[in-house]
Image 1 (cartoon, rainbow, N blue to C red):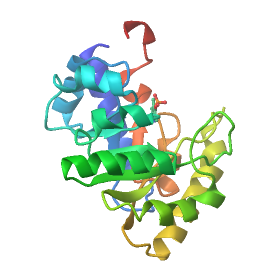
Image 2 (image 1 turned 90 degrees about the vertical axis):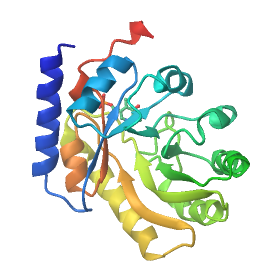
Image 3 (image 1 turned 180 degrees about the horizontal axis):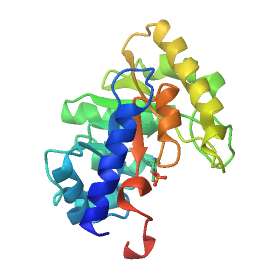
Image 4 (image 1 turned 120 degrees about the vertical axis):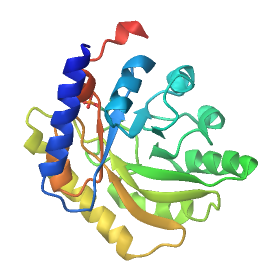
Length: 231
Ligand SMILES: *Cc1c(COP(=O)(O)O)cnc(C)c1O
C-alpha cells in the first residue's frame, strides 16, 4: 500500500473512534496485522499505532523481532494448545481463549516462566458451528473454573460475530456481549477483572464501540485488502 493511503486510513480510524459514542471507557485501537509485512506495520506504529495483534503463532514469530518493540503485542487468532509455549511471555494479552484446556496450558507455561498471562475469553455469540468460543450459557461457569488457575488473569471477553451484509445486523450481538460482560463484572469473581471487551472489526467497529467495545481489532480499514499470496 502507498504510505499516503496508510496515513489517510489511520487518521480516519482515529477520528471515527474519537467521535463514536462510547459506553465502556476509552477505546484501544488494535491493528490486526495478519499478512502485513514488518515494514508496513512499523510505518503504522510510526503514525502512532500502539497495539498490534497477530492470528497465527508462526507468523507472529517470523515478524516479531523486526517490529518496533514499543508496540503492545496481542494474540487474537485461534490458538492451539501445542503452540502456547511459543508465545507465552511474548504477548501482553491473548484474546481468543476458547476452552478450559487452553487456559490450563497457558497457566502451565506461564508458571514455568514465573509470570502471569492476561487473557480474554472468547464467546461464540452467534452460536455458529464453524466458530470456537464458549456459549453464553457456559461462560459463567468457565470463568469460575479458569479463575482458579493462578498464573492466568482473566481480563474480559472477546467475540467475532457472524459475517453480515449490513453492520447494523451485528448490533444485537454486540449488545448481548455487553450484557454478559456487565453481568459477570457485577459478580466480582476472584482473579477475574472484567476490564476489556474486544469486539468490532473494519466494517462495524463504530457500532461495536457504541454497544460497549473498548478494544477494536481493525485490519482491512487500516492496511487495505489482504493479499494472502505473500504468506
Ligand atoms: C483479521 C481479524 C480482524 C480484522 O478483520 P478486518 O475485517 O480486516 O478488520 C479482527 N479480529 C480477528 C480475530 C481477525 O482475525
